[in-house]
Image 1 (cartoon, one colour):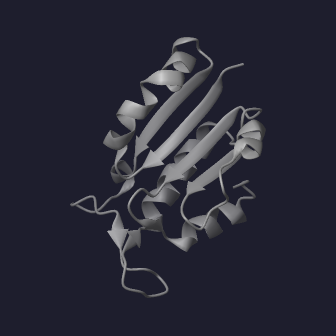
Image 2 (cartoon, helix red, strand yellow):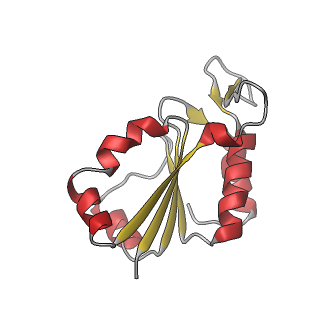
Length: 134
């Protein structure tokens, strides 16, 4: 069975090179994994497609708005269920070999990539309410 890997990114262009070279390229060529990158701006509905905002709880740094994530996650979940959702954030779980082995058994994984910004905590709460593993 082919693994499906969906990635939500604020800067999808950064993923082009790493996803299309080396081991990931070979895995895609051998039909072991199907990787879909989703541009977060496609789910922002204001005229400027703005995806960042002031933190909900206050603070100096801006965060990625939750609403575009809600829209994208709901759309993707209407198409399939995910075995795991992974938040790439300094607050997250350490990615090690044991975790990689666990994920290798999954069929569908969603990665939410914050890149240079933190993800609004309401996105985690949204996933928790839907009993999504992350």
